[in-house]
Image (cartoon, rainbow, N blue to C red; front, side, top):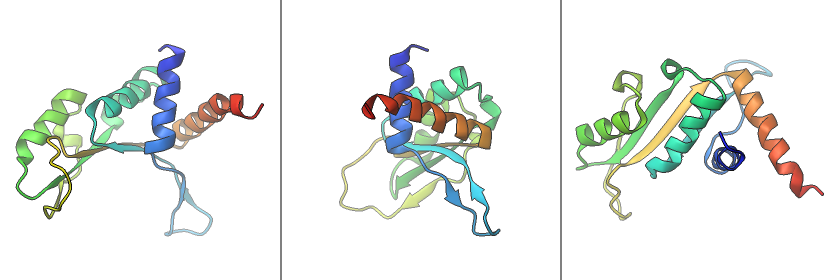
Length: 137
């Protein structure tokens, strides 16, 4: 992957992704989720490709979750994301359906891509910090 693509993927994770968080079940334990959430399929795909190609995350380790509004075509949206990202729907968590609000109509809902791996999380964090070093000068 070109350096620009790596930079974009890392910036997306930095801005749209999850951070390390405390695991409340145990004292001094942490969770290392690698997640990115967005309504734009291209953003999700860029990060997904980076995970799969550069970080060698196997497809079966990837999970997805969709959030839509009441009245949206759930089946159509689920099939769209599954086909676009090449992730089987069996790897999707239950779709969240929210009450229709005053927000704009989004034809694809919001998609959360996730995987869990402490080593991959730490590698992403290291790569991001290396990319950000140019701003420390």
